[in-house]
Amino acid sequence: MNRPLIAVTSGDPAGIGPEIIIKALSQQSIHTDSRVAVIGDSRIFAKTIQESNSPLSINCITDPSQGIYSYGTLNLIDMPNVNMDTFMSGKVDAMCGRAAYEYIEASIKLAMDKKVNAVATAPIHKEALRAAGVPYIGHTEIFGALTGTADPLTMFQVGALRIFFLTRHVSLRQACSMVTKERIIDYVKRCSAMLSSLKLTTGTMAIAGLNPHCGDGGLFGQEEIEEIQPAVKYLQQQGIAVEGPVSADSVFHLAHQGRYSSVLSLYHDQGHIAAKTLDFERTIAVTGGMPILRTSVDHGTAMDIAGKNLASGVSMEEAIRIAAGYVQSL
Image (cartoon, rainbow, N blue to C red; front, side, top):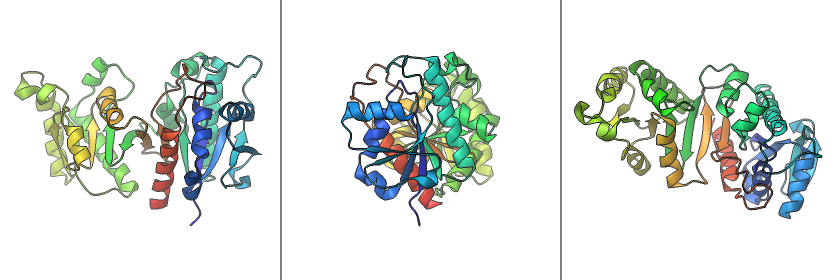
């Protein structure tokens, strides 16, 4: 079998995306398990290679089939959409927001056309996207819209711990109102289908509690009694391996120890804090429930250190490895 071909978007050009891609591709082991075609502006990458003293050389291509997939070569689908006369590393800029969106758009087309096996993304900046008039708040929403997927699933993976999210980019107040029996049932079914599509079919999913101590029988809230427990009971009757609610202060630890194969986190930070505390650099986002597979680093553009050769490429390495690993298992 050929090594999986992964399209890697360079993210916001003013952020650390180009740097972490260069550092990831400077690791020889990446090239053992995968072939990587980067999408970005060759002038940005040339500048970053010089700043980081990287041994990589750029091979500009127009199609992934033209790549030279061996150590030392950065195969780049060149999209020169940055005005280098005004470009500044670390600056939030509408131009860079538009460029980042266009890289993502190109990667999705490649994946939908079966020219690559999966996509791995470097970080984008939400303010830059908004300044550019991009009508989506983040990666997940862009991938959903451009693949025709109404509500893509986000799964965090760090080691053997897998975390899904019932809600994502909404306020905490709104997230609490979205914890309903119907939504939980729908998500557990779709999360189970995603795990199955990735050949991960054994084990039990745990539903995290929303309130302290899962509400202590209603003392601290009714969501566990009125929404979560009825959802779990219904799902169990349908033959789905699920338990809960399990108190959020222990459920992620228990899953990490192997008691549960995955966890459904009820709001954004509940699962983010658990995963990133365990291993910040190796927490990877996997977007599923779509016709294509996408992985991503789970850190931001780090504008404060962009252009200073201080960023770590570990998370980008891991995003590429996980994407390639899932492709090989399918």
